[in-house]
Length: 177
Image 1 (cartoon, one colour):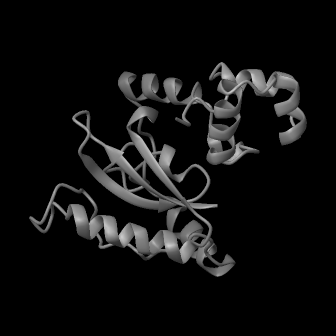
Image 2: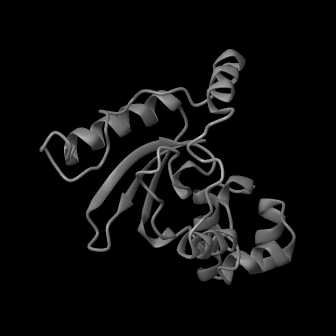
């Protein structure tokens, strides 16, 4: 599954648009400029095909506009639609070789604030281990509201009844609205 995501400011305006798979929308980006916002300020749109996710990313960046070009509110530094989601072994080896012996980070210690943030992130359930799609989780919650039993939902989605209960109690998939 591929998705397009928006990171929102506290006032609800987007500040970053990206295309991802797995945990991409829920973690900061390597270049260090951006950190992921709290889960309640991340919007996802799922796509079956990667090319559709790239098109949506480009559209959203054009729609909201890039701040560096004085065209809008986004902190994106490109127009989107580029970047491999599964780089080749050769590309991975080039990246690994470039990162080896990176003297910028050797001997540096994390600040207390950075350590606190890392501890908080470790407590967040990470969706890349998810067995269910966001739509399936929404359907489970909707069907439970309409009166479907936990046992029936468990059979239908091939899950243990305790897993269904955790979804309904928002102990699992809390990030899915």
